[in-house]
Amino acid sequence: MEKAINRQNVLLQHLNPSSVSIYSTNPDSSSPTSLYASACAAGDSAAYLRPSGFGDDVVIVAAYRTALCKAKRGGFKDTHADDLLAPVLKAVVEKTNVNPSEVGDIIVGSVLAPGSQRASECRMAAFYAGFPETVPIRTVNRQCSSGLQAVADVAAAIKAGFYDIGIGAGLESMTSNPMGWEGSVNPKVKEFEQAQNCLLPMGITSENVAHRFGVSRKEQDQAAVESHRRAAAATAAGKFKDEIIPVTTKIVDPKTGEEKSVTISVDDGIRPNATVSDLAKLKPVFKKDGTTTAGNSSQVSDGAGAVLLMKRSVAMQKGLPILGVFRTFAAVGVDPAVMGVGPAAAIPVAVKAAGLELDDIDLFEINEAFASQFVYCRNKLGLDLEKINVNGGAMAIGHPLGATGARCVATLLHEMKRRGRDCRFGVISMCIGTGMGAAAVFERGDGVDELRNARKVDNLHLSKDAPYK
Image (cartoon, rainbow, N blue to C red; front, side):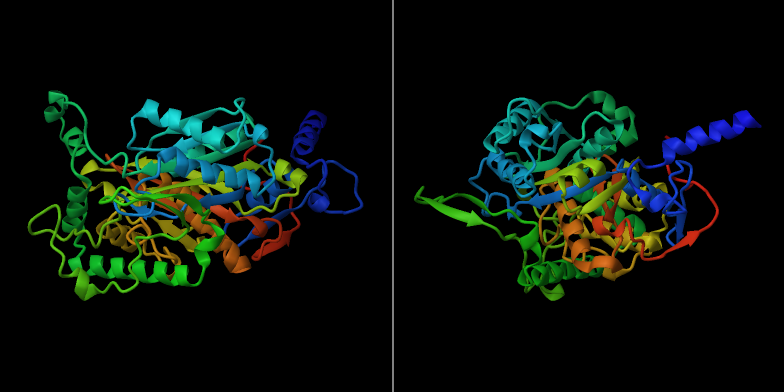
């Protein structure tokens, strides 16, 4: 019996924070074994209270992006990829006064550029942004979720103790690196149907989703119009100013070759006057009798984004305001022929891992690769339309493949900050080419310590999803 009591005391000493007294049932007690737990309607909330005191959770202190511009025709058509990435890398450290030399790693999501070339461009961008040679950088490619994967990789590395501060970023210049298959295809692919489906054009997978799950052309066009309406309203209200870093670059006149210096600070693909009747006139792009058009698909775009993450204790030590808390991440596989259903599969996994239910999520950023898959996922999960893409999505803002995840983090967390205490949890998700989906759960930064729906309980217990340390 004595041995068991000693073991419990040792365990509780590990669990007790060294400098935070909110865990003591008696504020005057100096006992290392006294702590209280909180429960909330969103599930067993001790996991969300405990890390705040222990300083061992991963937080986001800055998230910025460039404007997103139409590839080949927009504001970044003459801008090098590294000149897109450098401004957002510079912004996340300058605006937080973090010493660049303290960054343990920079991970950049990117999809289309040749791997070695893009890796070199990212390293060059880090130097442009003022990072010393001692700070490493690498790229990651999980197709359309690459930017989110970069953020998740940094969060995981911080949690593992590899370093305390890192940057997850995303970059894509679809002007410089258009989509396309280079080289030959292995004849063996003919023996495996799922492998063959990995080669399907993304637009065909959109048509497959629409056909298989009965998503009408009208539903798709309505979703596209709503995306433009919300994005236009957000732009007019100045909502994106908090997340967009202006980029000074050049525009070259294709006829005269004349160069003009410009500063790009507004997404240039938004069409405020889009209507369902106008979109209905557009012809299907991928299938003669199909429903996927240029109007109800994501825009091909150029852009970049960066997210600065660190251990909570480090952020507290530096006195940095916490924009958000990284909670969980999940990547799942789905049928490549209907790859667009990925969010419907990934979101429940990530939300469950956070100890939450779908109804606990206050905001969703679901990438609108195609209206067909967006509408399907929204309907499949039974989500409230007023919680999803409240400032528009990729059909209006754009989808620079590797940068989209980082863009979504910036958009989500800044919107959650604006909404305050009525918005605690947010989810980002996207479908992934070749048949996958990814999702991550975030918590608003200033909502951790004072839970709006918490009550004190007298019994001592650990959260069911709090890791044992």
